Length: 578
Image (tube, rainbow, N blue to C red; front, side, top):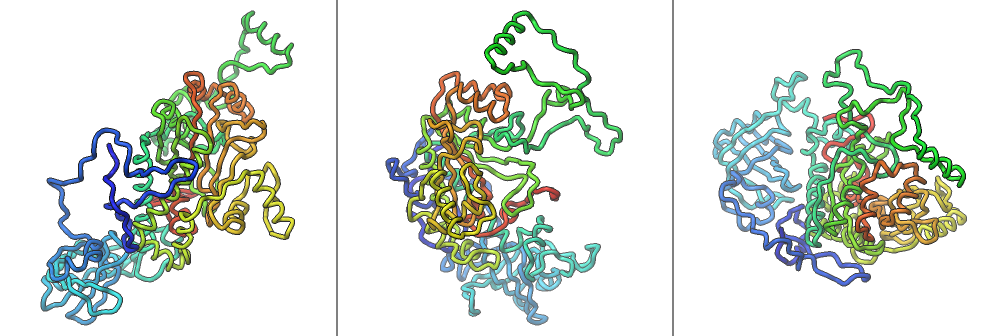
């Protein structure tokens, strides 16, 4: 593995989520020396170029034709894709607007009965949504709004649209869910298997791909190792309890009646040894709480010792605890994978299944963590501006997008993020509230800031991304380093316009005694994460990290409003279709 060779940045805004050329690296914070990620961290030699000896497309992508017209004008090409529109000008002339997903712009393909072999196939496809393979000659288009068109010489209908009747047996577009007319976002979510054919969702997926590629490139070129953390876990990273349980106790046949779940019965009183009795008496004399050894067993509760893993297991809400184990040996690591939260929320900001990017850096403090997070976010924004220009322009002009999107994104990379403490932010919010700014939640020290407060700070007060640090310990997780004042923790959230919090991070608590105490304060049994505590016993080091919700990043970059529109198959309470 090694970084890609250095190359100049593309300045063209017409590129659509391509990954052939890497953009310039984002400027680093003044707190750290400026380094070029493309000068790189060579992990094991130089990466070989991608060359195929066997695989070759049997077609030309429409993106390649439209981005390099001079090369293709006058040449014969094969293209394939799905029709956005089918227009019959006469019995001898058909216009097919073909799109293959490689870019947002479609290719106008002209079929004439006198020159196109299998011409009749172009007329019996059923209309929008049908698929074709076309051979023809690329030529300049005389029509306004398009530079090129394809004069078709051979028509091959790959798949007609059988939407002419409810049973799907008649060719026609009447019942096709993604007809050429405009559709609401809700309608497209209900047809999630077909919505990639819509211009909006296709553009969102191209941007999503570009942001995933930019993420891996940023961390790879900075010497981070990509660690795959488990999806099944017995630990609750956030301590919120909003986890999906995994069990085989219900059996494989979900139609089987009368399934019996093993439950704990009455428990015999445990006999204490003389040594244990003396230990308890000593603790009671000192006024200290007596800790029970082993897991507390409640009569009538589910006996998970009979389950597949021998204990309660869940889908993970975060890979952080697991990836920290590798940071404490491999130094700089990150994980990028799916996470799950059983939060019964129906807002446009929450999903039950989402992706998280979570880097961890060893030998680092909170400032190092903030610097990394700011550099990473700026790199992703710059990558989107330089590599996804066509799609960002589409979102700017879409009724579901955002006017001035690219200017907002440029503002992100052109100046340092504003940094201030949580306490300073609360004072600003309290002053605004006193001056008549209407908030649904009254700002006061100790609250977990709602989105309206976060957005007010970065949209109205500072007009750029904001980093808040040193939050009250009672509203943050057990693993965050306790500050010297004993009231706050070394945490940092990055707030951005339109979204609010997009990144949450902290310096981790690396002192064993403090970590154990914090676990107990937050109602978490340290024994449940004994392996995490062990990291503090064996060669502990200061380390830090952050988490970024990937879908919120896509919302931020595209200007869309609902998080359900930036993931292929959204999951939320009451919906797990497809």
